[in-house]
Length: 172
Image (tube, rainbow, N blue to C red):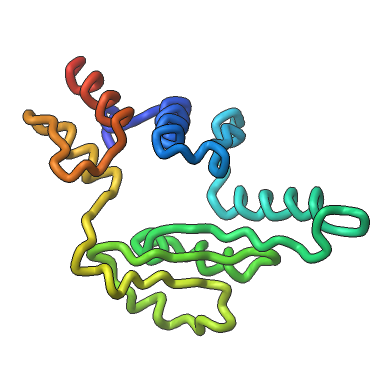
């Protein structure tokens, strides 16, 4: 990814927070800045496992809110699952599971090799929606905004993202 495509972690968090407010979901969804405040890189599997350990140490046990441990579910697209073997490995770890959502153009041959009942991998096939799916990848959105027309005919991104790219493209 070239430097012109790069968005700082701080700005990504701000855009996510604005999108959450736009959808009026701030009571349910929040952005954690923990990873961007660290000096080191932490991959998704380590972050997910640490979240499960933290939540269970705080919420589960005698005289605590929950008797049984929570299971943290890592959610990703089928394209990520196909490229990254760590997703399937993560689902085997304690108090972890993975939900994989069908992604337009991604093969589901690999995920179909897993035993759904025992693997802790939940495949959301979107079987009935596949004919209507639109590719809403960040790459597709970025390419839309880098064109000379700078339009988003399918409203694939939030107003805050459109504004960000309008400002960014006008500087280039």
